Image (tube, rainbow, N blue to C red):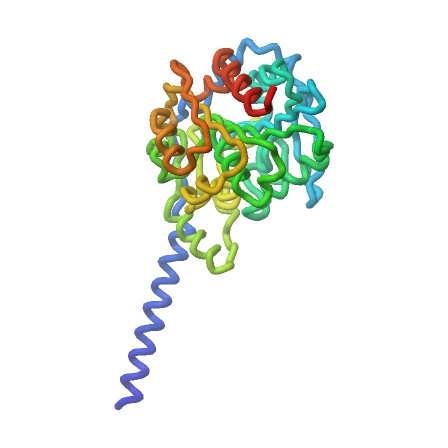
Length: 331
């Protein structure tokens, strides 16, 4: 009788485990980011129709440690002042053209890069091979581009999700790679006070899938991380010009992580944040209080009358960013 009861208990436990495993697997399989109507604030570069395309430098390439190409555009100026410039979500090196020009005019040699998964960098649009690969790529790029000389003042600067990657780098194992950091209208974290719901309609996020894959990753099981978890509100197709969908490992590799508050508190390199007061994707008026509470060493500047994409395309915004860079670089 006792053995029969024990078998029933074990059978019940096994059934519960199987049911939980099936539910967990279903979340991973079927929780995908939904489609969104194209969002002008996040999908349009103001004034880009009037750009002189002949002024945009040709794409250059270096090779990462895995043999994959890393693409960039070079705007040369002073050889002892370098800015590595990182685009926003779904973008490429060319989307940073106006800001790169302004920084070059201020004296910086600008290396406008396309992160792996964007603009012909890496091997798959919207994906990397493992979570920390973008960090490794940055080390490989600095070395291959000849920026390792201690006489070169190096700044890492990024916009939007690229700004989030800047903050990640500023507190990560490669933080000594750069002398200072500038985050332009940065994505901080999904639960940051600065985050509007769905980034103001720009991003559809498969939260259940992210949670499930994060649990697996926490157990040392990096499974199914090529699955898409973020889709952006753009009608663009995946090619060398746009990246409309991100995998789990690419998304995770661009962000600070769940302990973002503590991470920001540990940033000890000169770091500045700048954002337009009329930003449509983030709450611009919350950046100052958020960063002051976490790390008062980080300066925050809010530029009146400018929206999200204005910060990398409008002359007044680009001038403000260039002036901020010159102060940080000591010029």
